[in-house]
Image 1 (spheres, rainbow, N blue to C red):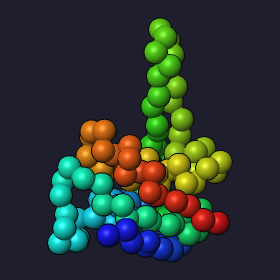
Image 2 (cartoon, one colour; image 1 turned 45 degrees about the vertical axis):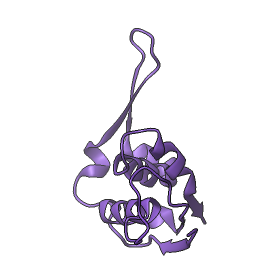
Image 3 (cartoon, helix red, strand yellow; image 1 turned 90 degrees about the vertical axis):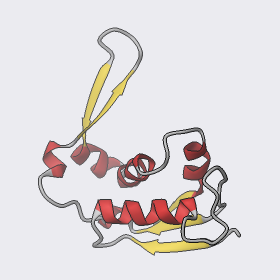
Length: 115
């Protein structure tokens, strides 16, 4: 049951949109849902640069990464990431709402962005 869902992201809050996308990607609304299988649903998001970020998140939220070397910490603000690649902000939010196993890497490949 491969379905293609198109979502317009303009004016929608980041978290609510991410949870809706995660639900569609996972296929939990289908009768044939199995937690250990990929549904094959594809979600295409339009206008990702017009997502609504509420509160003080733009100034306070940071993304953390580590190179693996001593002193290799890197903190990047949400504001900086949103200005350069707004798709990454939404994709990171959706990844956080998927299960924490190998299946999530397969599922997230079905998330596409359109200008």
